[in-house]
Image (cartoon, rainbow, N blue to C red):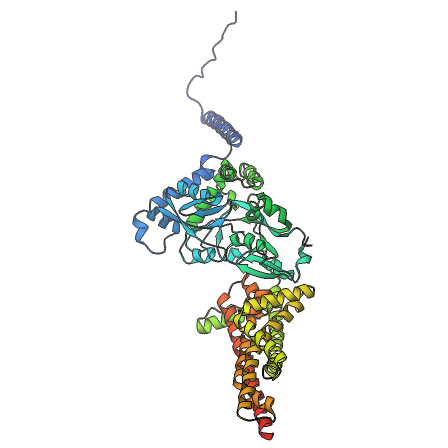
Length: 577
């Protein structure tokens, strides 16, 4: 048995020193207890993960609650964030494509595809309806800037160039690369094989600049949906577009038997986008929604429903399930989000001066002047070559027109049946044939006789333009010769006929100069073709084509002046005779 001996109680009150020691002892015990509690809570928080206040779900709920609290009072206010406008109108306007297999297609009023279902899921998260608006590669960013759509989900690659045009939502919702597709027998295996070849692309495709920098010529289309058909009817020998677009076509046995993916390049993440101005709260909400969709696998579920490749989406799900990314600050963490594709082009040595000049013009006149052809090395090279080849084409077309005028005019004015009628039949055929068809026939013949090259295409264009205009002018000369014979004139007949038909000759020489831009239809690298290539990856389309108008106006004025001098020489020679 253990005896318990009670501690003796102190007799009388504690002295001051004893009271201080006792108080310190109690404070120490309290401090140690609090520290222990804090340690337990900290360990529990680390084990469980981020607290509810740090989750993207809680951040989204707080953001939407704050925005909804402003409705309806803020609905009539100017310059409110687009998120408020969406909640006020109870709908979100989403720009989406009409034809992009697996991602967004439309048949009547029915839309379906991966991007369509992503938009509908976003609408459900915001508690609003979705109003779809048709866009394409060229219009999706302008429609955002013009406040005609709130959000673009339109197979848009996120690159450094577009960062200045729209605010991209991150994390990205898909990723692809550009693939070059062509006939299986065509010997193209890398970028270096594209020099001098025409590649069909869509306007606004971010990879166009890289194709141009490798010497490829571009034929532009507004919609990707036409590219497979243009390959089949041989309008296009090669086509470049996202591999995700061609994925469905290669499941078709006939298409797969005829065409092959030559190579791929420019791997780029796809981003939803909002306007850069007035959309801060909307962008934040969409960032959090995209983060949640990746973490919870909703993107994967929607992708599986539409049979798209899931590798990127599975990889992103793993990223956004990690503790460092699964927070309300995850979208600002460089370890969690992907960078945009770097599409910065090498600037020209005088790019800074051009920018200064543009700003000077805007400050002085209010005109937003943009000169992209002078700012980057690929654009400057295209512009310079375009001017050079245009001058070669114009000079050649004028010389060919004059030569065919003389030859066909002499033949149609001849008394010899074997000379006159073949010339007349050729002229009738050319007059009844559209100039585009004449160009295509000339290019086909040239390609059959010579290897495909810039010189071959230019030669075919010069011959076609010279024939078409020379035949008409030659007919005027031939008719003048017969008219002069009827008047009893015999000496110097051909010279007199040239003088009498000089007005028509000048008109068709001018027409030949003005008609040279149409040579771009068969791939001639003249100025229109070059400027079209430049605008496929640069802004400033209005300024660019204004330069084209100024160039050809100046050319026609010079041609008219030269023709006037030619006519004066002919008149002087006729007077001397």
